[in-house]
Length: 196
Image (cartoon, rainbow, N blue to C red):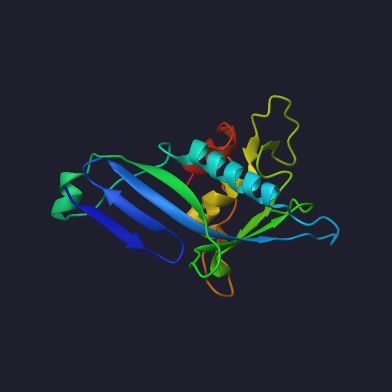
């Protein structure tokens, strides 16, 4: 059976019909920021951060998200009842390799976000590689919690809620926050995957 490959500016996608899987790889080029100017990044810290980001995204997304085919083509009709599981890999690129995303990692700034049109991700070393309660909820059970890196990956992957996140000036779809009702009833980062 054929394998289809698509290389885009935000991710590379390999679709294997025989295995029933879609493999998505994003190439991340890190910018290691030190706001204080007094706490330079060590190689061990960089490796640790990337390893944890890759692990969390794999654990929370791979084989949980899936795609289906719609349409009238022969291929779409043949696979109309198939759910293709998606597996995800984050590859750390350096030097002259072409990145999909520039990822700014900071040590003391938990204002994590994705700027879709510039292909930029902002993450925090201390808060985005572990479960953290969602701001505004008193929740000792951590039901309303997320791993920031996996949550922001969801935006970089293209996950958004609705047209209400359209920029009225540019009409660009903004990949907004998917943790809204009824999604808040979802457990941890499942909301990133299931509420679209």
